[in-house]
Amino acid sequence: MTITINGKNKTTQDTSTVATLLASLQLAPETVVIELNTKIILPDTYQSTTLSEGDQVEIIRFVGGG
Amino acid sequence: MLTIAKTEFKSRLFLGTGKFSSSSVMAKAITASHCQMVTVALRRVNLDNPDDDIMKALSVREYTFLPNTSGARNAQEAIRLAHLARAASGSSWLKLEVTPDPRTLLPDPVETLLATEKLVKDGFIVLPYMNADPILALKLQDAGAAAVMPLGSPIGTNQGVLSDSMVEIIIEQARVPVVVDAGIGAPSHAAYAMEMGADAVLVNTAIAVAGDPVAMAEAFAKAVEAGRTAFTSGLGQRRKHASPSSPEEGQLSSDLAFLD
Image (tube, rainbow over all chains, first blue to last red; front, side, top):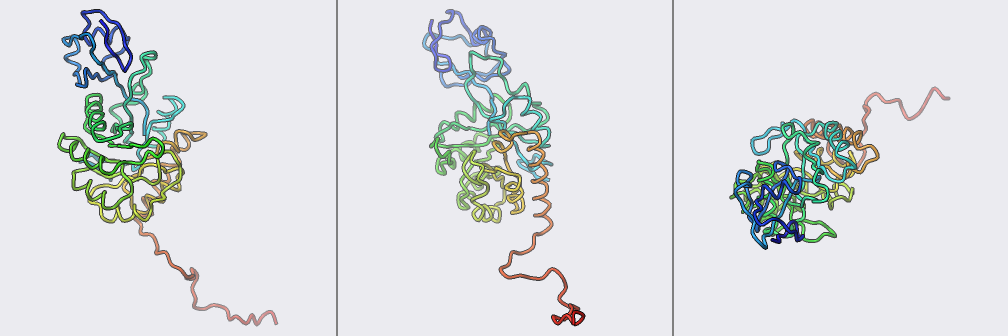
C-alpha cells in the first residue's frame, strides 16, 4: 500500500503499524512524535496502530530553534 | 530570582538553539551561558538522515525546554504545533510564535491572542512572542500568558532594542515577567534591556553566529547580570544639563594667583 510520510509517498507492507514503520525508517521512537491523519499518536499505541492505504503520517522532532 | 509559572530561574538569559554550526558548539555555548531555559523548534524528520537528533546534545533534566511554534502562520497552525510539542517534550511550556510573513517574521497580534486564549485553556504554559505593544501585552496577560515576550527588533536582525520606549511601558504595566526576545545582537543590547527592568532576555542568533559562540555566550551572561544588578541598584536620572561630579565648594578661584 502507499502512504504519505512527511509529504512524500512511500510504499509499505500491508500489515504495517506505526512501530514497524519507525523501525523500517531506523528512527528511535522516543526521539520523534507522530501525527496520523492530523491526530497525534501516543507512544504506547505505536504497536497497536495499524496503517491504511492513503494515510498521512507526519514524523516530527525537535530541532535547533529560537 | 526569576519565577515563571512557579518555576524558579537563577539565570535571566534564555538561549535559542538555532543556527549553531554543530550540536557540540551549541552544547558548549549553553553551558558557558549558565542559562536554564532553552528554546527548540519542531520540524519534520529528515528521513535521509534519521540520526540527526538535537536532543542527544542536550541534557533534558538540566534545562527547561521551551518549544516554539515557529513556522506557524495562524492560530490554528500554532495550536497544532503546540500539541505536537507537548507530546514530544512531555511538558506544557510553550513559546507561542505566529508569524504570517516570512520576510519580516513579525508576530500576528490577533492570531497570537486567539491562540494564547485557547492554549491556556488547554493547560499550556504560554509565553507569547509579540510586538512591543503595551495594550497587547495586557490582553495576553489577561488571557493567561505566563510571561510576555516583546521583540527588541525583528528576529535575527541584531538591531538591538529599537522598541525601547514601548518595552518600558510594557515592563511598567506587566504583572507577569517580561522577556525581551528577538533582535538582541550584542551584549550591550541585552544589558540595556535588563537595565530597563526586563525580567529576562532571549538570545539566539547573536551567540550562534558569533566567531566564537562559546565566548560570546559568556559575554552575554555577564551583560545580563550587569544589567540586572544595575536595574536593582537604581540608575541615576537622565538629565539635559551638566551636573558636576566634583564638589563645587572650596574650588580654587578662577584667578590663578600663583601664576602671577
